[in-house]
Image (cartoon, rainbow, N blue to C red; front, top):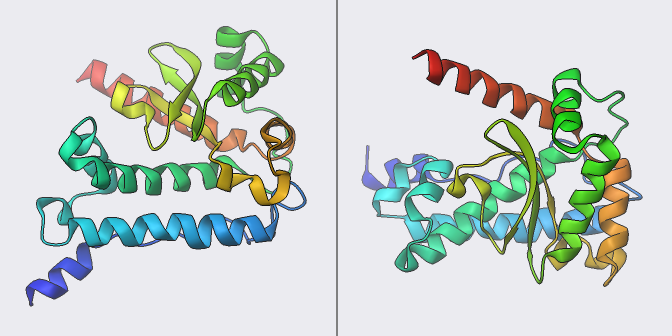
Length: 218
């Protein structure tokens, strides 16, 4: 097999959306999804593949690339594109087109321990979204035994600070400007009230708890 074929096999692909491009309407339009997913997200994939071709990163998994390049000035371009692929994939999965029903018990208990109520958690997420100056992300993370709301600028990710992300909201302007113009607060409120995939957050929480238990027993 030629080196070109080996490199092609290891290149990253644009992950499929977990729903149709119009599934989040009227909160997020198909037009926004078309640009956000079809242009921005795809652009990060294309850029990363160009940057890592012929390097040691070409055969590495996405999360490994992120950890290996985080905080290294000479690897900023690789980090930014790899992290933005990961962040966007996580964001699409943090949203769902239909009512998820009751909050999963494993997540409900943690939210009430950490924030007292789901409403208090949502208010903290909204406040963090508005406090983020410029482009970035707002996250619900597990940090030790507690859940926290944190924000990161540009392409930064919580796992580089050893926090485990459960869900995220994209607050880059391209995430909302076609639908909400400069009304970031309206976009964030609409997402929190209608689109958050709490089941996805619960699955991530359960996964983190399992991994912690295995690490402690090992």
